[in-house]
Length: 401
Image (cartoon, rainbow, N blue to C red; front, side, top):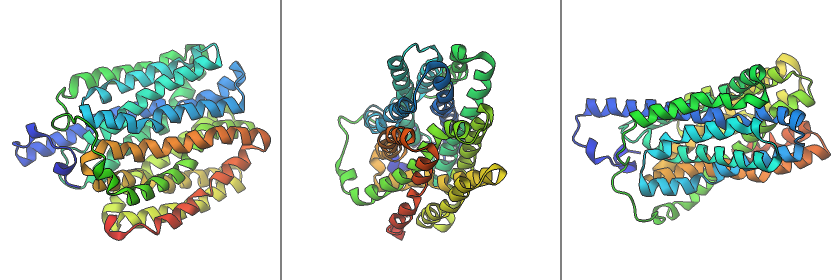
């Protein structure tokens, strides 16, 4: 998708190509930094869950409700933020997001009741949601070519933050305790200060729109719906692991809190590597082939994780993250190609709407089912969803990929 089709920047049109390219990479760098920071905090709830269960009496069903709230406010509502972003084009959607996510998520240890926990999760997740649509469009707005590669850099930076978030929070909470969890907000606040200085206050994409233009989106609703379902199925595995893996490994496999948090970081880190490589593979072999290979190839390592123990199980977990999450940037780029004038809105549908719908529907259900059966059975059942995704991916037309 040409940059001029996605987000027009009249102030940059007169720049020579080398200057435009440098501006494009600077844009990408700072949006990627913000993405890294925001997703450090978006990954924190899974690390809080064991401590909230042991020190605050949070049950498995309540843990599922917290996870559902996290993905509702942080993901399901992303299309709303995408609409606002496409309309107003303000850099503040991105610049203030790390501050909001950091302050509210890091304050979970201060909550004295379950309703307060829900409120803090909602507010922190809203910061996460406000960042992604506008930043995903702005990060590659000045890139002329290789947009899949550029999007892979942007998304992988968030995936890396998502991967390191559990380790960061587990180490910090292990030292200062749950009651002083608010100290974890400091890096996010600093990143917001940096973004306020560096990001230009001008709108990212021409004049603000008086309203969202739905016709271009409705015109491609069939391929968009297929992409949405593919992300939904992949997200079922990713988000259930993100929210419940530390609980599962500590309760049902006997790992320590630190080891369980490191396992989650490893899964997400391999996903970051997969997302980075997936963009390059898509540019070379075609997005549809990479998506098909990812959906089918993730199933064997997931089975390995659930049927073995020790180092072999961790190998399966790592490979599952690497393969399953390799399509994250690909789906976003495909959606932006289908509706280039509504780049933020369709990016939000792919990055947040589908992820959030999976979490909102399935995380509370997973918590309830886990109390009746076990987390092992529930997570193992969810891990078979990519098989259905493979058959859906077969319907992707080569010319759309």
